[in-house]
Length: 216
Length: 90
Image (cartoon, rainbow over all chains, first blue to last red; front, top):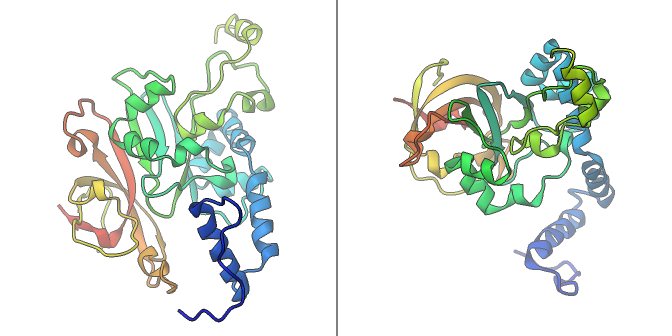
């Protein structure tokens, strides 16, 4: 490789190698005119502006509208578009519906594929080797460590995002939420429940009591 | 090669140098096609600056966990999207 460009590759402070490598790559891509810094910055700004609240809105709508749930399972980007959410240039994303008899759990064993447009940047543990290796071989053990104990009769389906498609779990709607508004429902939908390692929050006690007294 | 839902398929265990999206723990394993997905550019060539054409179809394949891991006791399954050129009739 020619080395006639005039910047250096010296480390910045105590920069770890893992950070130095993408920085060097970015410098080269900018230098060669493949990317410009504004585009990189805009993309990072967009990415970190995505949060699990986006996915939670989709799940809450799916809980109150079965047709929407179906569309979310078939094409989450189109479903997000219906709600006015910006999914940017994101990959194909599908919803995975949890039911009484099936519990989905998402992992990417090859790297860290994640529905970033709907959930924001992934948590550190999602990218860790232990999560990626153990989720495929011992999903129930991993779920137990996250506090989810499933009956043996519930089929655990691990979905490994190996190729081009991203996945968003549609968790089961918690009991006692019949009287809640869509916004109140969305507040129960956690990031982890949309990865499949948790179940949604339980509603506040008063709400649970008032709605269960209605015979739900 | 195209595969219909319900077809039994084996993931090829041929050696492959370089980038690919077929996890090692599935190579040589047999599963059932759940459904066909869209076609996508091939990451094996796209990773090296090529256009990734022709596009290849991806299949969602379900595997019995007890066939993947010795000692796995329940009827759980694992699903993965596998590019068509990594699948063989089984």
